Length: 119
Length: 284
Ligand code: SF4
Ligand code: SF4
Image (cartoon, rainbow over all chains, first blue to last red; front, side):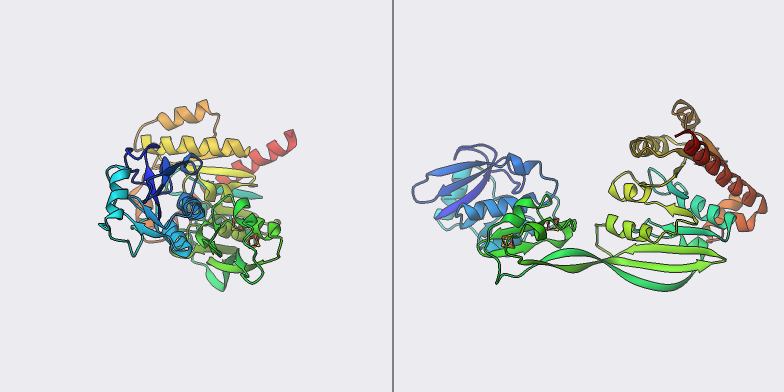
């Protein structure tokens, strides 16, 4: 399964970036092989509004089935829902920890977006 | 002739100035309240509202039967208001600026227009003063199209006084653009001056002549007058703090109707503005 994790860097050891739309990088990780692709999200970081919508579209295109991040606002959430991508929010620590947690089934999926859409 | 009354921040008495100028001039004047998030000029002008219309803005509507998921629509949208994910096209109406770009580029003709309610526009009158205001729907943030709609109702034969929203962002520009004069209302305090400077820079960019009204001119410091001189911004009226003025205001009564000497001063204010506009039109 492919998982998208927002990240401050380009490695599995990087810290999770709590932001989604404006995350520095988004890592698309294969949970079985731990192979991954680091996507530079800088184009979105500068978007005036709707960065989460763009990021959500991008990870869906990459075939991610789950997004793991700190915070996911309502518009991004709606986009992910339409794309059939599940969301795990309130993630922190290293990207690898997040991937390990989901492999072990130790996560709970968000049924609603985080409050307030100003990220 | 269009005079836009603006202020860098709220609460400087912008509406007091605009409504009193309209009342002093009386019939033949037209008043447009473009402070659509918090329109309150009607509290002072007390117009009789004759009719109300809903104002909508066009947003796209996608026919998925025709859509081939080519993504041309989302590629052209600068506002991220439309996106295509796994055989769905999502539209975020509150991000859409109604530019129509997506409709134009869709090769399948799958996009048509539908309306989204922005607010309402009210038409009325009082003693020969024509009155129009816009009121943004609660929770709506897209005010420029509503402001433009209110302005489109202006009668070019009349003296049009616009009550602009406070601040310096897009809504204010929508309320000042194309005006013959911008009258700025400020208070002589450091906060007032800070916001005034921002507003003056905006007006300069638009290339519109402007002048200043200093309200509660005896509170705070004198820095605003020094600034006005440096900027060659004429101070057209100063209103000292007076208990009776403040009281009249708090009860929704107008200064010019209560105190006849102020009617003259507001007429004078208008004539100074008129002179500046005329001078400018003969020199360019
Ligand atoms: S009308 Fe313009 S702003 Fe609205 S969705 Fe289409 S392209 Fe985007
Ligand atoms: S441009 Fe038209 S056909 Fe292409 S994805 Fe958008 S709505 Fe569908």
